Every structure is written in C-alpha cells, then in structure tokens.
Image (tube, one colour):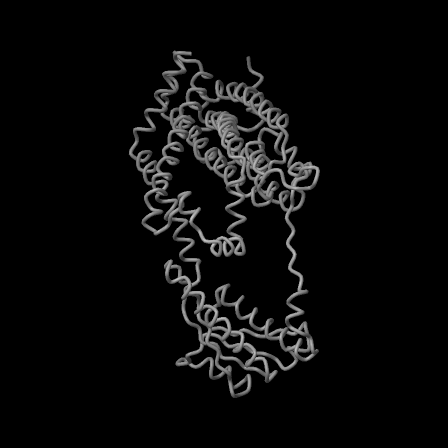
Length: 465
C-alpha cells in the first residue's frame, strides 16, 4: 500500500506543478466566463432603429398598426419617467413604419435600391383580415432578429384582431375580460396537504431537470478529460519503456490504482480551485456591473419590480434555483463524480495498457464513451416525454449511465432514498469488478509491444492466471 501511495504522490505532484495546470486552473473560470459572455453578447440583438416600408393592400391595417405603436410608445415614456429615479430606464428597438403609396412590385424595386433607407418591407395582402390562414410577407436585406420579427408579427395580429372585433361589433373590454390565459403548473401530490394547499415550495420538475443536466455535464467533462489523462500517462510510460523498470518493484495493479487516484486528485484540486475562483469573480464583478444580489437589496425591490419579474418568467427561474434540493444534489454530485471517474478511469487505464500509441485507441474508446452520451440524450428526451418512465429508472441504475442520469432525477425530486443507495451500491460494486478486469488487462498489456490488440486478445488476457 505504501508503494501505491508513492505512485499517487508522484502522479499528483508531477501534474499540479506543470505550468499548463497552473494556467488552466487560474484562467479556466475567466476563459469559461468570457466564452459564454461573448456568446451572449454576440447573439443578443442590437438595440437600434428600424425603418419598415409597409405595403398595405387591406387599406386599413396600416393605420391600426400605427395606432397600437403610438399607444405603446406613450406608455413606455410614462413608465420610463417613473423609473428615472431608480436609473432603470428601459429602451428597446424602435420600429418606424412608412406606408408605401405604390404597388407591391414598385415597393420591392424601391426597397432594393442601394440608397434605400428601409431595413424591412412588410406586405399585407388584401384578404389578410378575412382569412385566418393567410400570411403577410416580411422582406429583408439582412435576416431580422427574433425580437423584431416577433414584434412585427404581434402588431399584425393585434391589429387584425381589433379590426375583426370592430367589424363584428364585439366589445373590446368584454373580449379582453373573457380572453383566456391559463397556465399549467405541475405540482407533486406529495407537496400538498389534505386540503390541497402546498406544503413546501418545490421546483418545477422540467426546469429543475436542466439544473441536474448542468451537474451531469460537469461529470461527463471530468470523466472524459481526466480519464484521457490516465490513458495518455499509461501509453507514455509504456512507449518510453519506463514501465519495465517500475514493474520490477511494483505490482501492475498498484501502478494502475496509483495513476487513477493520483489523476483523480488532480481533477478534484482543479475543480475546487475553480469553485473558489468563480465565487471570487462573482463577488468582485457583480458590484462593478452595478448589480446587487444581497438579501438586503432583494428585500428592497418594489412590488412593481417583483411583479414584472414574475411576468417575465424570471421569478419562476429564481424560485426554481432556490427550491432545488441543494444538499442532496451537492452530496450526490460528489459521490457520482468520484464513482463515475473511478469506474471509467479503470477502463481508460486498461485501454492505455493494451495499445502502443494513442492512434490505436479509437476502436476501444467509442464503446466506452457511448454510455455517457446515451445517458445524456435519452435522459433529455425522457424528461420532456416521460420523466418518471422506465428509461429514467434503469439508466439511473445501470452503473455506466447512473452518474449522468441519477443527478437529474434527484434535481426533479422524483427518486426515493432506497433507489439512490441502490444505484450507489451497484456503481461501487461495478467499479470493483471493472478495476479487477482492468487490472488483468493492464498486467498483461503493459508489457506487450508491436502487436495490434483485438477484443478477442483482451478477453484472453482476462483469463490468464
């Protein structure tokens, strides 16, 4: 056991002292934050004015659209004046409509001129009001962003609705009163008392599932990254013939376990530093951006701000985040984090011992990676279609997929304690068995050179005494 400890120490210190490890540990959170911030900034629509040429062959919709826009602009001015005291003035892209006094064909020619000031052309066909299945055209030079396209579509539909109500003599106030907008909130029966009132505030299961996916993706990344490091380390020592010296005084199984545990500790160290550095970054950057997430600031939010947050869907997201079973999630994450890594690293070490170069590993890596990918994809599909079906249950029990799927079930709070304990027990037993099999392959393969290994050959090595 002392020799295994020396190998763990060597593997750990050799890697954590590398400049690449130190740089990635320090720069990792910054690079990830910068990467995602860049994606968000590049994907967000630019706030700018748009000039839209409207060809209205209905003869009445243009005026209705302009009237709705005028009311919205007036309301926005009033709301912004109310927000000026709190520096919360909101601006959005400004749509400026221009009615074409010519035919659709002539308007197209005008729109396509190089010096044309118009960004889009909207064509409203003559039967747009009477035929519900009719469509308006949005002609563009540059593809419209989603908010702008949604806004134009909304204006057309609101105007059409108002004109039809006027035409049919429908009272708008009564129509708005009876117009149905009902949402559906899934509530677990275990979260209700005998009177049907909620006992506690649990997260909505589909939103909570995506939080579980976040933990699962971290585990997959960890397994793939550091499992590959174990495999490359074995291949490097084998090709350099260093292993021939080491194996004279240390058992192959001890070498394999030393590498697996040593590299695993490197990964945990890096992950721990990333958590600490991310916390520091959030603490430092949040005030610089003018944001305050402290409890005092949250308590000072006006009722209007809270209502707007709920209406926009942010309230539900925040409620879900606070309602997640964090203690169970974090503790289970650590268990499956380590269990999944140890299980797959034994396989990676066996593959590294069986081949002479990294290019020969592809035929063996695919079967190892398929269960991880399968777990992610099937779980994602099952959450949307049948979140408590047999697929989710069995994938959370099968040890090759349980590190990915069980965390999603825990986040959704759709799992019993005995299921978690059974899953962990199966994972632990499978790790022991996989380590034994991997050790048999490692013991023979580590000294094999110049031979292309097949699955049949590896099965023979397992049977060797």
